[in-house]
Length: 176
Image 1 (cartoon, rainbow, N blue to C red):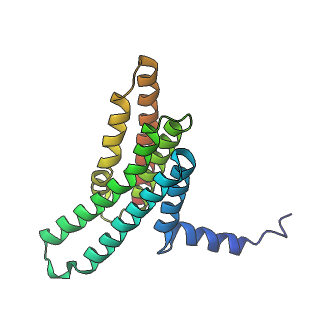
Image 2: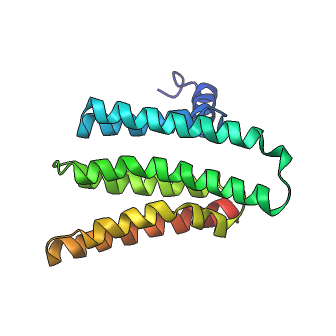
């Protein structure tokens, strides 16, 4: 069976999906499809449009940030990155509040995926990556305090601990 597997093609596909300049579009498409399948095609399409709009604004503002110096440039990049992560955090929020059977677990998995993606793509250090994850943490706290019963609260707390572990492990791996 190993003679039929083209390892070079698999490596090229993985490099394209995870580390090319278009990698974020693959991530957006995955999130949009998951949102569309769980919450409906209109919500998935609206979220996808929002994410692409924020991404284009991020690219445009980053390209025109040359006139800023020092702290102004750092503040602009931080604001843009935070806005981008906030737009990505909308999708798990949609899934959580849709109250479908698969919505809550998919929202938790999506939060873990977004945290890991932020950690692996962070280029300005661990503390910066943690600050960019603030919308994900805020959404996790909304999930936690929106729990109705003690069992739901405990389960949501355990999910939050797992997401925090994924983020810490990804940050450690990316920056060691």
